[in-house]
Amino acid sequence: MNHYKEILDTYSHEGRLREIPRHQAGSELINLTLNDYMGLGARSEEFMEEFRKRFPHVSMTSSASRLLATDQDVYAELERYLANAYGKPALLFNSGYHANTGTVSALNIAGTLWLTDKLIHASVIDGIRLAGAECRRWAHNDVAKLRKLVERCHGDYERLIVVCESVYSMDGDMAPLEELVALKREYPKVMLYVDEAHGLGCFGPHGLGVCEEKGIIDDIDILVGTLGKACASSGAYVVTTPLLHDFLVNNARSFIFSTALPPACAAWSLLMLEHLSGMASEREHLAELSDMLREGLEEITGTPNPSRSAIVPLMIGDASRAVEVSRRLEQEGVLALPIRRPTVPEGGERIRFSLHAGLSFGDVAKILNSIKNAMI
Image (tube, rainbow, N blue to C red; front, side, top):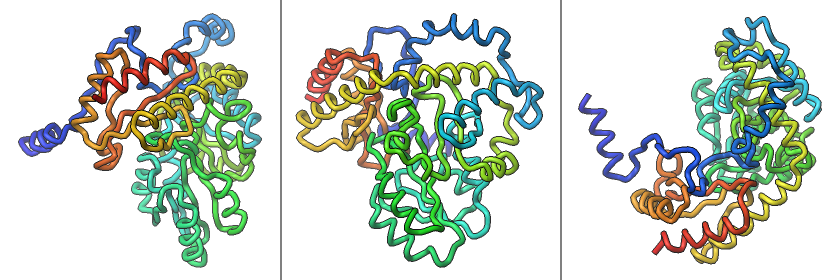
């Protein structure tokens, strides 16, 4: 047991010992820690009457996996809604982590090479490890480096699956999706896998994400959406071709061997997606808030900020310093937690600000003033 303690002591010495936050909901702090980008989670009470009227008998437990459950109505309704929205079949998973680990490991058949952005989410990396898959990583958002990999490897494999996130969760920057689509069109063996976890709700005419905004949904072979962020619910889904949908039903272990989400979660997700579809003005407001915070941070730090989304980082570069700045921000009335290893590499420590559409421009002005004070 002492060996475990020694490891934890090392974490503590390096300023990266993690603890579960104990902040109380409903405090007067401006909370910038959540992924509730469109503010639906904070407004959940507004929708409860509509939810109860529409789904009066929905169950709180499935008590079985999807392949064994007898009551599939609400899951099927949610998947039909998604299929109609995207124009392709959708399959519901229990979380974004389940969706990525299950999908990646299932699709790793003989002749497959995975080409992943270096900043891809841990769930994709874990899926690759679980499958024992062959993988090459390409420099973040560097399509020229990716092209060289494709040129070098395309003759040796049946398929090259390029994986990226539409919006990256730590820097808030966006993948060069249109360039990736152009590369795919040039090389028929290339498939595109896009995780829209942080794009869903925030982008697109109907809030379907960056791929919808850019008009390239039809060019994406596997699209993952997460329901626990802007959708203010729980679960995730994979949108793909009819063939790959059926393949995942039969081969994605995280789908086959997990008790299904409570039907109530699926019902709530459906309701939230419908509301997200009509929140164009909130999406525009969120983009303006992001621009204001990013430009303010650039003025404070004197360095460019990579964000182009509701996620805006303040780079610190030291774990202990990040903890201290976070503590000072809380004293200033702003809750924003430090991000440290292993979430980011050493030297990449930061404060991650996660904006939501319920904020005002006055709130962002207060946040910027608090950052100035906390950085002294």
